[in-house]
Length: 440
Ligand code: SAH
Ligand code: SF4
Ligand code: F3S
Image (cartoon, rainbow, N blue to C red; front, top):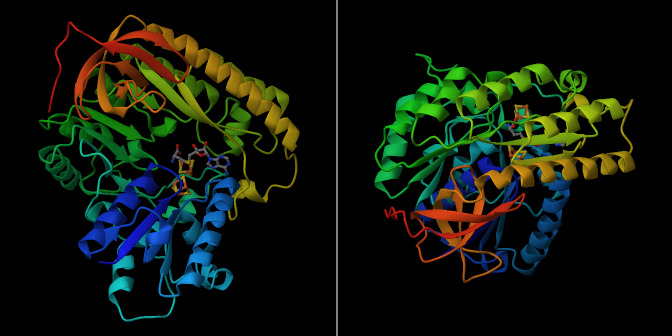
């Protein structure tokens, strides 16, 4: 049997696409190899969101080149956003690569592997959904569901619209069917994926809405938790917020990317909302879902960001009190508007200093916010044993907080945990004796 190995970089969308790649390869009769050294087919699913993503991947590609020299029969394939962003250049720069494909062309990998072609091939059209390919889930009780591909936004720093194309939604009925099938297959938690999930359905005829999709998925028996990522603040309407308040399965967690706290910088980023509008959305969310956990993405050091602009980002973080944040230093990307800016660039040391300040505020506020969970009983979906202490269990609360706890339970069970301690990143606790367990 031929064996494959996939290394995945980047976001949840790529993790999803890799699972589908694996599902497709297994349907073709391939088996999974534990390491690239043992594989006949070495695949990379790449990301290009920041410069670091590129350099990490290129180090791995060097290793694949050595393996290919050892055994020229090996096939090296490169998929995903980096591949798309450099397209056919791949073969000039890396002649040992046999096949390259963008995120919209994962299915073409099968075509390549089953054809007699021995020459290098590239596939870079935008067509089809990886969600249509067979899946191979990492955990049987959790699943990604791709609800749309692409992005119609124009954020000036972002490479994604050029690597994933225009936004296309999958039909509402098809998604409801897919989640029904997943539930029948043992899935209790689904995470809906899209670059801008809450603009879902605008391109469909008849039009569908994201809130409507949440409502229909919530009625499916066996689905206890619905999550999604990422929504865009500009499209965060009341109907979606109410879904969190009213629907039992929709979790009390919203990832609402801020990017910057200064309206001037938000404008330069082309985010199409202001600081005030963002804070008004947060207020509306808190009004309907008081116990919500909010997380975010923030970029520091965008070209032209002054101390005063940055101070406004810190202010928003203080005010909102996020439960967590992914913080990034601005990285110029090829083909983006902000990547072309040559004036007002923020010096490296300044970016690093701002990042330190930002992380300090985010962590302090997250740790303060997490205290609200202490002494409460939280439903935890058990994922496995604790990474740091194998005698303890690990899982996630509905708020998407990692919970480490003592007691006996199996992966896939939802148990009630009494929370005894909280830090910025994790909660600790013990299995409640009072409440019952909810096995599958
Ligand atoms: N579609 C999602 C995810 C985009 S990528 C969304 O809009 O939320 C994830 C995060 O990477 C972005 O939210 C942004 O904070 C960060 N990011 C994107 N491009 C970047 C760049 N050029 N430099 C630094 N961070 C970037
Ligand atoms: Fe990039 Fe903006 Fe689209 Fe997110 S919404 S993928 S940041 S262009
Ligand atoms: Fe995701 Fe990276 Fe592409 S973050 S969308 S894999 S550029």
